[in-house]
Image (cartoon, rainbow over the protein chains, first blue to last red):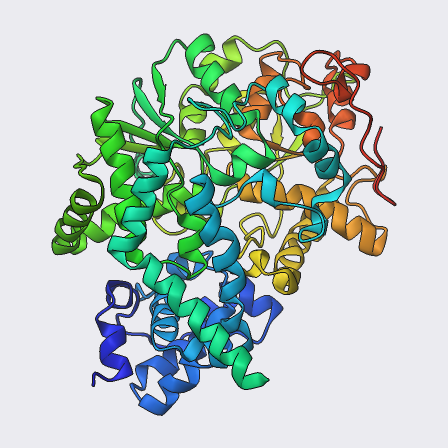
Length: 210
Length: 354
């Protein structure tokens, strides 16, 4: 079996993201996630560079890798051309592939994103859709959004949208052909498999907790 | 001076002059639903440009990708399908409305340059799953780049300037450039990551005054999975709050953003902070209006604010319209397609609205 480090090295984002970190801490200084949590990209890259399997396991089944917001400010600032954000992407992919994501509270929350954004893509052709966004799940949307949603047929028509109709335009109904293309791409390139990994990993964790 | 000019040249980018293939944004369509329509109208009717709005185009998957729920290979192949649709339509200049997408498209193209075998694999996956093939765009830009390119032509047709109609002073305007516009690939953004000029150029051309403040380049706090998961949203509001606290002493009249997510968060988190702390970042209690660059362009061109969808912002835009001297109908704000009354949104607890 390949080591965690070898598996990470197979990911081209890992190859792009990790050159030779000098542990200067510039990434942590600029990182919005580090400002609001104990996330520390400098420390995380240092841990990866140890190539120690136990240390890597600690990352793959822990919360830290899920704290990054992927703004990629770290890419701009690193004086050695590293991108901790890309390393995170590779770690997250491996964490899901190995099922280790389900061992952490933050990792488990991937299920929520899969069941919203992931399924919206296949249903609507876009990650987000007005029909799915209510102020129960998204209270920050506020009263204007509530009013907009209640009157969306009329307001969207006034604003020149093509809401839920065929043809071009804002919030149009995506054709079956395009949705079938997306479905086929998701099957061919591993997105469906990842969805399944997220569902089964989280289901197993829920069962174990019971 | 010569050296200075040469240095600035390295911060410029090629933006095609005409004949574009348009890709819509997941977020902009929902939260600023008139913006893309206005963009197309400005290009076609004001500037006489050719732009194709393809009904078959879809998400680039960027939000799912950056949240870690789909593989890189999937994103690459969906991007390849977008390029295939562009190729099929006979276009070669790709323009996208989303800043996350802009970063995604550039990232995929750069990865294919560094790993040509990956491009080959993607072509095979696309062909197998959809039967499509594609050409790489000759020019790929964000929609704000196009507005920037034609900012002077828009100014020449303007019916108002970004100045206070009482006294004539320029409005103080905060520009917020989305992280993925230039922080990932600085050479792909006007002005790079250090001196992004894509929105500041609009402010300068249309008569406003840029606000420089300490957290000008800080992220709005979207954080992808951090916002999408309800219990993680403290990440998002906190980062926006850093920005509001930092810009408030400069008394901005307006914030403009080129990323639809940033526009949304900077608008909605002001409402949330007001509800939580009874705090606003202007002196009157209305908050600082946050507009997309298309909405600002529409105002400058004299379009009706309610046809621009400005009534859908949580931070009321009327204080801005009054400063600009825009003549608008208050009754028209809450009317539907056929002029029917749609009632009014509930009032927030603290944030003032007209």
